[in-house]
Structures are given as C-alpha cells and as structure tokens.
Length: 383
Image (cartoon, rainbow, N blue to C red):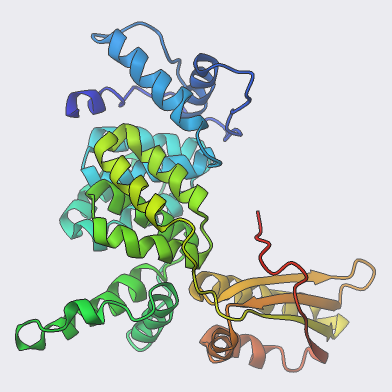
C-alpha cells in the first residue's frame, strides 16, 4: 500500500483556478478523471509513462474518475479530506502533492494550516508537526509568507467556557462516565484536557467552521479505525448540521487512501446510526426587525458582521443568523435567527461577541422589534 501511495506524488505544474467538480452523468470515468486531475494537479492523467503505468492507470481512474464522482462534495472539501487523511497516515510525500492540489482548488493557506492543526488532538503533536512542516514547504515554494495569520479566538480566562459550550452542544455529558474510576481520580484531568484543549483551543479557532471541523475529524477517526469515537462523532456531526449523506461521501473519499476494511468499518457505523432519532430540542425561531440611524449604517454593519461570524463559528446552538436590508432603505435591517433551543439563545446573549455588538450599537439602533415565529416546514434543512 505504501508503494502505491507514493505514486500519487507527481511533479506539479503552477496554480490553476478552482473549477467546479465535473460529475455529469454523460461523461465516463476516463473523461472525468482527466478533467479532475488537470484541475487538481495541472498535469495530464493516464499518460502510460513511468515505471508502473498499469497501476497508475488503475489508481487514477478509480480515485479521480469514480470516487470523485461519489456524493455531493466539492473539490475543495475533497482535498481537505484527502490532506487530513494523508496527514493522519503520515504519508508526507503524498500530503505535499495534495497540499498543492488543495491550494489549486481554492483552499486558503489559513484553511490548510487549520486542517493540519486539527490533527493534533487525534494523533498527537509530533505527527501534527510533521504534517505542518510538509505543508509549510509548499507555502514557501509558493512564496506564501510564514507564519500564517493567527486564528486563535480564546484566552486563558475563557478557553474552558468556550470549550464547554461547544462540547456540551455536540456531545451532551462529555466523557465523564468513561473517565470515572481511574486511579487517583485522574479522569477529571482528562475530562478537563478534552474540554479546554480539544474543544476550547482547537475547535474554536478561525478559518474553518465547526461543521467542517467535525466532518474532518470524522475522517481522522475513520483512518484510525476508532470505532467507539466514530459512533459518538456521528451524532456530533448530525448535531452540527452535517447530513448522513455528507458523512458517507466523506468516508468514501478516504477509501482509496486507507483501504476497504477501515472504510467499510466506518460506513457500517453510519449504517447503524442512520435513521435513529436525534434530539434537536425545541428550536427558537425569531425575526429581529431593526431600524438603524442611517448616518451610522456602515459602522453598524461592521459590528453586525463581526458578531454573526463569531456566533456561527463558536456557538453550535446558533443554527442560523441571516441578516438582510431593504434595497430602498438599507437602514431597515431584518435578521432571521434560529437557535437550537431556549437555552442556546440565552447562552448566546451572554457571549462576549454578542455583548460587544450590543454595547457598540446602542447609539445606532433607533428601533428594535423581536417577533417569534413558527416554521411552516420545521424539518426542512438548508442545502
């Protein structure tokens, strides 16, 4: 397998613009393979050249012509999944090739670095640093300045509360019952590490949203064949908005790199969990109708943008914050707000980013009307 994996690292051409994934039903796998390969690597597939042309023919047509057509994932998602899978496996030459491909299809340097950082809680710091070093080589070759812009969002004072908010929303109860009974009650330390470090310092970082982090985390666990964690992280993914179909496609994207046994194990767990009821609580849906001082609309919009981006990134209980302004009256703002439940809403009001928005816009908001509404199709999901 290692010999086959090494074959994926090719000499790459320069950056290409990101293109939409080609999945038209009328195209056979050879056409799709060639288009996807050209978009990803800037070179030609199925050339019949090299020391092992037969195996390369099988490999390229299967990965880029078949697997890349399975499920509704973008090329950007596929390359992030591939990169984190290769980083987990520590197949660094292939990781370097796919880091190049990821940048070619629109993954930003900040996002790619966060994909590497995300591996640390799963595989440990040494292997994470190996992966970061490999990606940094690509950055240097591309003329991308290092270090990349910081993405941390927590402080020593709030890392615990931030981690607890994320953890409790994704995994109510955490791992307390699993850690009970360890000698000298040291399980409490492990619980705290999980909350403060894993969820507080890693999951709260910028560049990648929580939905993407959970999806990529599932791919790491699939690669590691971490069966018990795959069960719990299935529900974490559902709770944060990933669908069973997306999870299935992500595991299949891992398949050519990890092999059938590990992929089938993860797919079997999805099959077991699929269709089981997931408690979503009583969603709180509200329209906030706001009249802003027209002279201060730009400053208000800046506060609003910062608050919404932080809420969607850091609070799993905030399901939707969608702000609009009337075309002929941009100072008339309406925000569709959807929260997982009343508790999530009350927690949202206490966050530092909401308080900053609230205090910063006090003099700007001339009128505020909060209208509680009922969804007519409560189970309808966003695409």
